[in-house]
Image 1 (cartoon, rainbow, N blue to C red):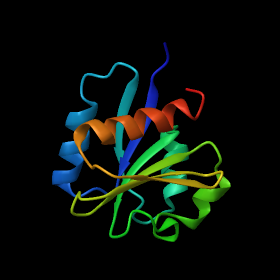
Image 2 (spheres, rainbow, N blue to C red):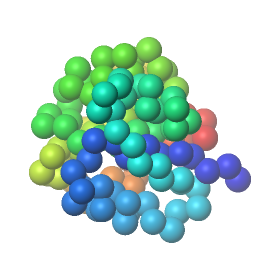
Image 3 (cartoon, rainbow, N blue to C red):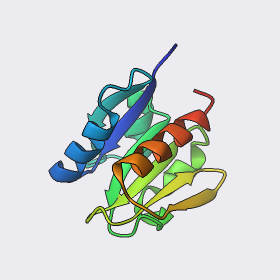
Image 4 (cartoon, rainbow, N blue to C red):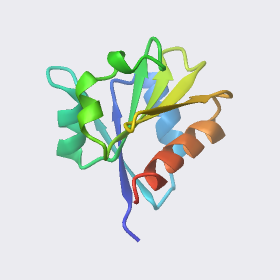
Length: 121
């Protein structure tokens, strides 16, 4: 079974550690760390071969704060987590948005695996 690459980008260290620990031990998910600093997030996702990107943003529901060019990449889903970890939102570029009501390790893992499954991985 091929693993799905999950790009962790622009996450504060504590949030990156939290998401990494949630994904740890999952043989179907390969975690890659990166950043969009100095380039577009879509370029980072393409370079990593990642159909799923996890980012931190002030407002995870605000698509424009992620990367307006991601809408061009229908093969990329984004799980945006609030900087304080209190809320999150999945963006699948069809465009659709699915709020995550209970931001917990289980819900973040579910959002990432659902995003990966939605990409035919």
